[in-house]
Length: 278
Length: 348
Image (cartoon, rainbow over all chains, first blue to last red; front, side, top):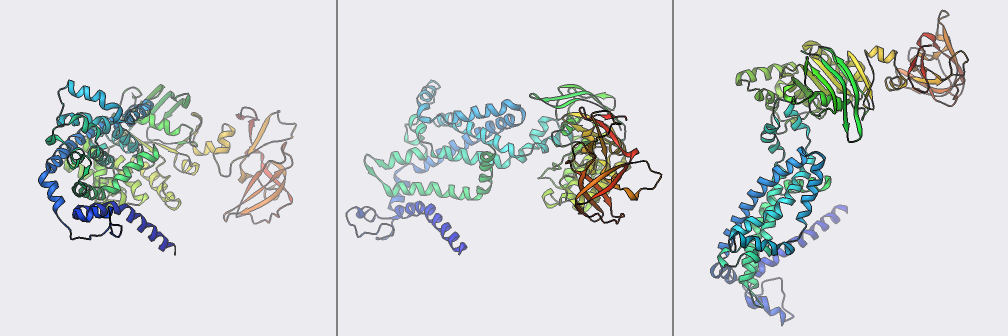
C-alpha cells in the first residue's frame, strides 16, 4: 500500500517534470493549423497530433535563422567562462577555506553577497565599462562580464565543499614530507573533483540562460548567443513562431539534460555539501 | 631516535587557552600517553609537536633541535597517525605507504622494498593493491601505521588511533601496537581519552585537564598515588571514592580517598591489617560477572547521602543483601588524603 502511494507520487512528479519536454516536442513537430486552431475550436485536443507531424519549424530554425552560429557562439563563451571561473574560483575558495583563518569565512560571505546584486542593476555601469574597453558587440564582452556572476558564487561553493573534506588528509601529506604548495598541487585537486564539477555545471547553466547582459552588449545577429538570438529572431513583433521557438528550446535542452544526468550524483553532492554545512 | 623537550608551551584560541603552560620532558624511546577528556588540550599539544599548530608561546625541542619557530611539519622528523587515519582515498594501499617515500625522492626499487617490509611487519601484504574504501577499520589503521613507519621517523605521534575500532578489535590492536613500539624503540606520543588504553600502553602517562598537566607518572604512580582529586577520579573505573569523614583526628577540610576494590567486607581481612572500618548501607548490588559493584552510603561520612562504590572480585563469594548495613573496611595504608578546597594531595 505504502509502495503504491510512493510510486504514484513518483509518477506524479515525473509527469510534472516531463510535461514541458513533451509540450516542446509536440509543438516542434505540429503543423501551424494544428497549433493555432484550438483558440477557435473548443473540441480540438491540444496534447496530441491532430494533423500529421511536420519538419517545417525545424527547417525554419536551421534554414532561416543563424541558430547553429548561436550554438557555436554560446559554446565558445561557455568554454571561456568555465575555464576562467575554475581557474579563479577554485584557488580562491581553497585559499579562503584553508589558508585565511577566521577572516576567510567572513571574506567568503562578503564575496557571496556580491553575487546577490542583480544584473538589472549592474548592466548600466558594465555597459560603460565595455564601451571604454572597446568590446561592444563582441563575444569578448560576455567572456569578460559573465565571470563576475560565476566567480563569486563558485568561490563560495568551493569553500563550502572544502569544509566537508577533512583537512587531515592534507595535513597528513604535510607531515609525510610535502610542502604546502606541493600539497595543493599533488593532493588537494583529487579531493575536490566533485566541487570542481559542480563549479563547471553551475557556470555552464548560468551562462546558457543569461539574457540581460547579452541583450545589452550584443547587437549583431552573428554574435548572438542562443538565449538572445532565439527570442530575437523568432518573436517578430507580436508574432511568435512557437514551433521554431520550441524546436530551439528542445535542441538546447536535450544535450543539457543528458549531461546533467551523467553528473547528477556529483552535482548534488557538491551542492548539498556546500549548502548543508554552510 | 630522539627525546622531546617542551617548555612553557601555550596555545591560545581567541581568549581560550587550549594549552596553558605545559612543561614536559619525553625520553628517547619512551611510550608517552597524553590522557585527558575532550577539551583538555591533549590533541592541541600533539598538533603543536607535529607543527600543524603554531604555539602562542613556549619552546619545543625534538632531538635537541628547536622546532617551534618556522620548522614545517615535514622537516621535524615525525610521523603521525590521525584518528581518521587520513588515508589518501584515490591511492592504493601500496601508493599510500609509498607516498612519504616519493616525497623524499627515494629510488623506485628502494620504495618497493620498504613498502613490502612495512606491509609484512603489519601483515597487510595481500591488501597492497586495494583502495582504502575496500578495507576494514583495523586494516586501515595498519595501513596508516605502515605509512608512518616507512619514514623512519624520530618520533611517532598518534592521535587516538584505536578510537574508531570496535571494542573487540581494540584489545588486540593495543597489544600489537605496544609490541611494535617495543621492537622499533621509537619515541612515541599517544593521545587518548581512554584510561584503559593509557594504562595499558604508556611507559608514562600525562594526565591533562583544561590545558594544564595535572600529573606525569607511570601507570602505577598515577593510579596509586594521584596528586589531586581530579586525577584520582579521572583515572580508574569506577573512580576513587572521596569522602569527608567526621573524624577529629584529621585536620579540618580533609577528603579521604580509596579505590572501590579496596573497600571490602570487614571479615575478609586478616587480623594483622590496620583497618579503617565503615558502616556501609548497601543500596544495590550490580553483578558484572568477574566483579560485583556494591552501591551504598557510609554512615561515617559528613555527607551521608553521597554514593560510595565497592568493587568485590568474584573470588569473594559472600552474599551482600541489599538494603542492609554491613561492616566494610579499607586497609589504612591504602587511604589517600586530599585538601577539600584545592583538591591537592595531603600527607596525613
